[in-house]
Image (cartoon, rainbow, N blue to C red; front, side, top):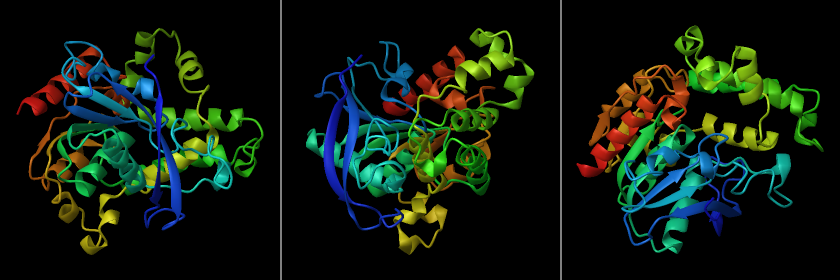
Length: 337
């Protein structure tokens, strides 16, 4: 396992934060992989993701799109994820339910400061899945000259109303649980976390995945066994999950530019980097139709739909070997162009 390093930096929280304008000492957990003299690629974590689970298939072999013999890879934990500053690890007065609601903009300013501290003056690429992809969109508009290539995997530039409402389901299941105690629990609310996972799991994979009983391909005889082993026992802190969920629900690149008056095409037009936009064909969080509309307004954008039945999870490498091969090929093609 690579060494987990930490970077601490004070920022003023963004206008969209619950503590807008206040100084916040943020601490980022990160991995630095490969030779730092090589072109740098940054990959942030996704919802409930960890450094070790963040798209390793893109760099873990010489045949991957980002072999460590050729690239310097920074894997960075997002705020609220449990490794960087989060409700579960932040000291008072920002611990637990008192942790500030932070935005993608806050994450990106900290990540940019991290790069500067490491002497990284330019990113060859920024690659993100799901919430990581929403961070990618924000990096693209907040620091348009800082990154050459951006890969958005199963994500969108603005969280849709449907996506926002889906997230209300697991959120309500957790917050309504008797052991959640309004977020001031002494031990993790296992009943609430189980309910959260059960609601979330329904949307993470496609109807076709369930129709074909694909849980059997993962080693389980029944759907119940699959749910018990993959969704009931979450390692994430409950308040951490709700912190990330808030950031996800409020994802919107137009919020960074009040002068754009909420017009998404205008803000997308600020992107200078070459972009590969890769939705999963069967994603119920970030459907391909959203990406098809967004790519129309990105000057150097290319749409490549992942042909998978693994729904949203396909974008993060939890699908088939063919899914991962498709993503690697698209990333490699972008970096060569």
